[in-house]
Image (cartoon, rainbow, N blue to C red; front, side, top):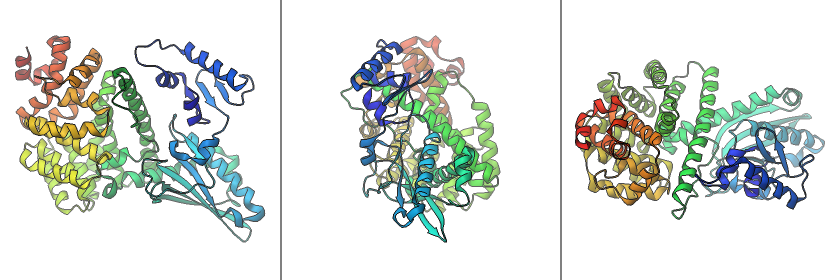
Length: 516
């Protein structure tokens, strides 16, 4: 508990977060246990709950570490975002205090502008670390101060920590604007929000370096996915990790939604933002559909209407941008509202002019597979896998598409090798994918274990999810049946055919007859 609190100084750790960290699913999960451990820690630290030096209580919310992060000041490896370095301070003389006051105020507001559970640290002498991808914060805010005629100026730059690539820039005069920024919290919040929003957009739209738009938008956030799970952990512990990642992703998704809306409000005629917004709505179902359906949340009709309106209004204006055009085509096909032939034609035209090969290949491969052209789809996906970095999010994304296509085509031999590659990327992958990509007639041990760990509610939500984001999108009936067979078999065998939602049973009568 002490390690968790100190990793996120000045950020509230809710009792639910602490329970997730300290217990396994099915254990005696009681908030009274958390309070008991906090009291023990306070005694060992000689801390006082009424006048805390280390652990403060936030009534109705949780606990927060207020003792400062001395170790993290020197080692930012666990942080999500870094404020620093502060350049040019030595030459400011008596004006230095003004610069440092601004930097500390910016740090405080930045902490408020990222989702709960993420850490922001203040490190005035920080430096990027070449080749440190995945070993430090994803981003840093570098502040450069200079004076001109007794006026202090600051250029704030959001950069990628490992490469130093600039994502956004903003300049402010600390003579003219400092009083307003310090006295008016909304002014400072707007300044920080614009800086972070533009950085998010720069990262999210960098398909030439970060893969297809769904991947680059996914990796544009300010948090790092927990990849520390090991194969020796219990199933309940791995399941709890997966659930924690789902909660974090949902929180990050909502933050990205706000960023897109803010950017769109500032530039309402920007067609690229409309495609990004539509892709963002689509990604909600790809990444979180199983959780939304399990929780009884179903906004599909409204979201599909929004996707359709956004894409159709933007499409005429993004034709010179092949990566956005291919994504627009994929979204039109996803709607399943009669745009299939139009979408395929648009995608093929855009693919022929695309310069971002590793970003366009998996998308055009998936589109061809949806239309039944499996023999043309797989070479695109294989080439994409050769071009992306092994273990990266683009690699995971492309492997998932490959497995989807192989399942649809019934190629079990090729699927075995693809699954081994997919499961080597993350220990958590089999929990999610084996009930979908496994052999329903001869399930593997990990497939049986994953299936037994599912409640009826979760099994039905997975079935609904796979049907919505995958099976229904294939033009050939046999491909749809191959995709739905494994999750449908899981539900029928565990909970009986009567548990299958009537609309899914109606769409797949041959599969239901085979299972019954």
